[in-house]
Image (cartoon, rainbow, N blue to C red; front, side, top):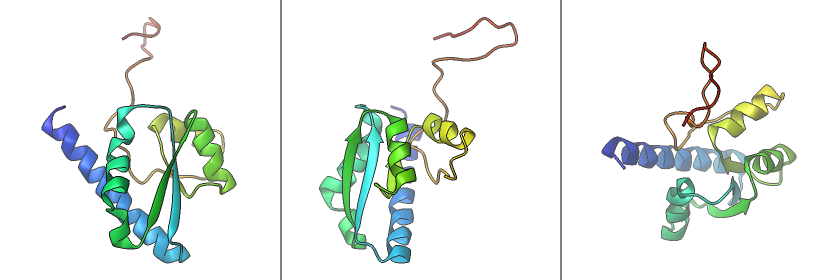
Length: 127
């Protein structure tokens, strides 16, 4: 991973912690449940922050909840079952396009996945 990628992950994790601290103060809530979809390395910074007790410095008791996919995480946020989720940007975009009143304050990625691209020639998906 390049330095810029590591820098982005650290900055987004710190930004998320600050935002969660503000959320905790606004709601007078000490416990936060954060969901994430799938098994991959992108949630690593959150697990490290939870394991190292970084959130406890801000009087937050953060727990991570692994669910099957991003859409289930989005549904859990909309239902109020979790206070936040660690999304792929595609989950946020999908939810907003479906009418969900949500926003993304930080993302561990600096671009959308290149698994499928549209082109003027209509050549379809490329890797």
